[in-house]
Image (cartoon, rainbow, N blue to C red; front, side, top):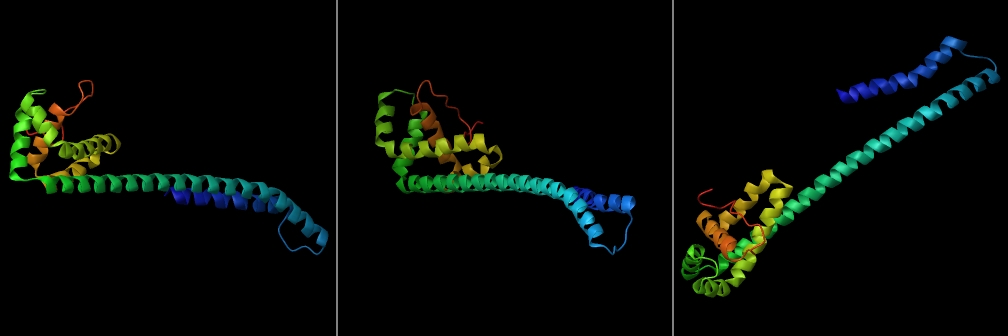
Length: 193
């Protein structure tokens, strides 16, 4: 509908000089070259600025469309990188799991921060926590950028690690790995959220 409106305006603007010229000087075929030259000069003087303005309008519109396409492409690329990163890291974490590791992580999630047992387990599974820190940071950043897609991104981790294991890792990470001044909060995988 908007395109038809613009097209009607363009047709009106382009036909207006012809209508005005015909009204003022009449319409017909002239015998002298001088009259044709005057008509050409009049139309050239009228159409040159009109077509220049229309060309400028088209260029501005094209620039806006290209900018939107670039932003869309940038978001799609960022989305793909984030999804691939979370998948790669959760697959790596999954490959490190044994029943003993799972049991230790569950135990660690229940221990208080700074306890000697927690420090031993934390050091033992530093590789897993380093990988989970990347997943955690990616989820946190992605939540700010595209909050509607966070469930899809978090579901990749759940797919590879199960919901309970993600909740356990997140709880242990929040309690034992986040700095005291750093804002950490339990979100995506918390059992009681």
